Length: 201
Image (tube, rainbow, N blue to C red; front, side, top):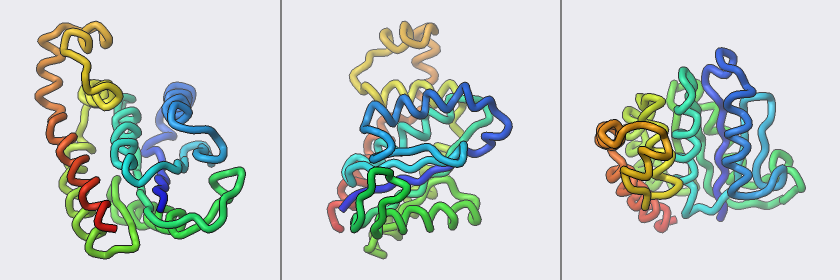
């Protein structure tokens, strides 16, 4: 089994692509090579292949990165399944993971959602999508400042508040306030729950 994330940037027309696109590419390049494992296409859509176990963590990293840019957000459709044809370009590869992810992105656009998952197991789909609906109430309302803290901690959860303050060039009290708003411990618990549910597949 593999995981495919198909995403598209919300409000991309209202933002300068040169600001967010290099950062998005830089993040995905830190995980794997393009175009075999990820690709940006049509200007504001992208696809990423990764392990099933790590897909929710990567989705959070993508979400928090894009939310650091004012007025931008991202839809993320996670498809879990097989890969029956592997091309040199991810957009030409095929299998149930790709189909699940691609169709799901269309569905969540119509339903006004920003995060959902489709696997071959309906019980897992039901449980995780209820979780994602609740979690998205928080994720979709991250401010740029909160998203920035979350993104840094997702990349390195060992960072101290002092190190974060230095990294972001803000005071430690500001870091403390943002940290409380970020609910980072709950994010980590959600990731552990996700891994537990995915293990049922």
